[in-house]
Length: 266
Image (tube, rainbow, N blue to C red; front, side, top):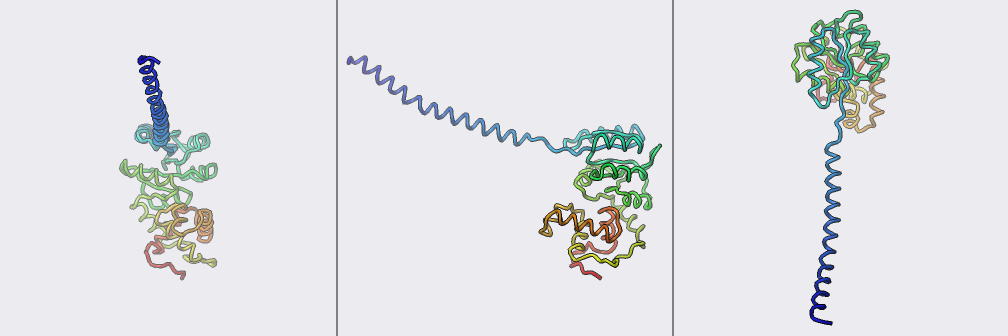
């Protein structure tokens, strides 16, 4: 073999040696790209939006609310209605998570509309947004099935917070309204302890409801399954003859069950 041939042979050998790591590097780079893409997909996962139906008879007010809500990524306005009759039709069509409902409207008012909405969409939550702060009206709305009650002079932050709380199944009542409602039920027709009294666990559940906690959060606090909490809530409402967990929360506040002392049956 000539010197030139030997040199060519060594060159080829070195070239082969360099190719192998290159291939490994390329594979590693491809793997890294895939991992980065996977992370990117996880980060860009779509946010679950709260589907809201806005029911308000004043066009300017309704359009303003819709515009405000549309600015937030976690909220989607799925429909609008100008009165209670339209609200029921729109709710049946759009299946919203939260129904933002005015009380004083033509054709059919909010108080008449609430039970009809709960009948067709029991899992949707109703947040009353009104300019009237009468205690009796607030109490009647909550008794009919509303989960929240807010005045129109509330701030943008308060409105958004209430929508998010109600979407999670938590009661959201403006403090000034809550105090009036509590005063309204100062002398309830239903006795505090019925012939079928609440169990210790039901009392604990009632106190946590009054703290605004969801069934999932109560289950975590009491170390039980969420289905067990749902049964306790149902039993509480039945025994106290209440229509909603919002009423149960107000009842607990009225009866002084918000303290940190162990709850005992009377």
